[in-house]
Length: 425
Ligand code: CUA
Image (cartoon, rainbow, N blue to C red):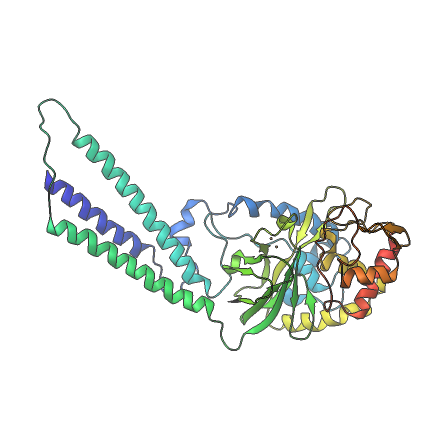
């Protein structure tokens, strides 16, 4: 009877080891997840939070693509024309407006970061091990409870005091498994936190509730545009509170901390449009952080900022085209673009309803009462001061939560925003 327990324990240890070995795909295989998890329901959305975003994106995409027709949205990145499309969208904005790539399986979205295979393998190995031991131990407990239950004619067996073979087995095998997991995890951790020397560097500024990505040539954008096949290093900080840069398809998540710099790097393997979210609760609009298009009636977010991975050569084209874009717009139109791109829309509506801040509609030229009781006229000077030192003249009833845009807006852009607000009669 003792030997039965003995055999059971040894068998489950061995099977555990086999379970680990079978979860390990061939080295270098990109689809590390599919062997283990493919059967678990591929095609389902990765999680409930992200599943809601797909319908969010689609209507915005349709609405904006009118004029360009369906071909505009479905064009591959390398075939897009440089010139703005008939619908008024630049080719890189069409890419950013595309629905987010949702391939993957129940466990994980498909990885598009070269360094993600290792962490996926770790995740799936630990998952497989946990599953195996959970079921093996449950089955053993139920079986042994039944087998050694008390019944008439059976005497209680004394427990085994000691068994060398058993003790060595259940010490050595788990040790080997755990040491392997540690070694593999440590190795991939070092890889994940060490960017290669030749990485493209992009500055990231997080604020409530927007991302600002600044590229080497000075171009800034609320969507993150990166080249495929080149390591990209993000140097990140925040103007206000803690945020967290989270791009699931790249397996990168990193807190963004005010007055301090944090880093992530990745090498995108496939051009496309990918999810980007803030993963640190940062206030009222956290769930909609970097919402670039809001439904004016329901406040629902129609499109959030995304990561756009460009085919080789297109990233350089994006940098050049994006740089010339703002120079060719009438001021009020530039301001309208900035209203969405700089995240003003998170707090200020243009339809007359107050949100976190006062609405822009009909504001220009009016007399406004300040928090200290004084009255000022909403004019060019006031708007400019509100952008540079938002807390200098606060309005009653609104929290002092606006970040300063000092140093983040060019002269033409400040002018553009003033003209835009002016135009909202
Ligand atoms: Cu930014 Cu949450």
